[in-house]
Image (cartoon, rainbow, N blue to C red):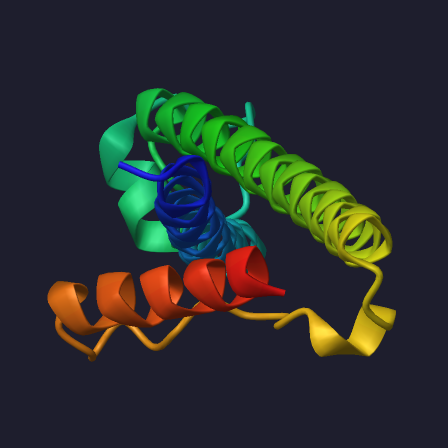
Length: 150
């Protein structure tokens, strides 16, 4: 296996993980935010009071049972922590993607300088994943052989 083939495959694989993590963190943040909003709305409609400890009086006035209120607060805190953690994960994945793109740009520029080509001559993206793997390998070999001949 040619060293560039391995590097090309590795970086395609890593970018896929960044996309998956970004999607996971975004959906988790949205779900946690919806839960937080629902629990805050429930708090507005069913406020807790310590004045009445009987379940019948609480039901008549539309108040939550104190045990349910504690559980609601626990869920609210857990949902808020999940939301903030997901947003932090989203920021971290974005920073990692940005650093990876900068590294790839520097690597392409360095390779272009080594080959004596203008920086724009080095391809920016790998071939589409829809192509058969053999076709990508053949194309890569042809490019490598064309550089060896010159």
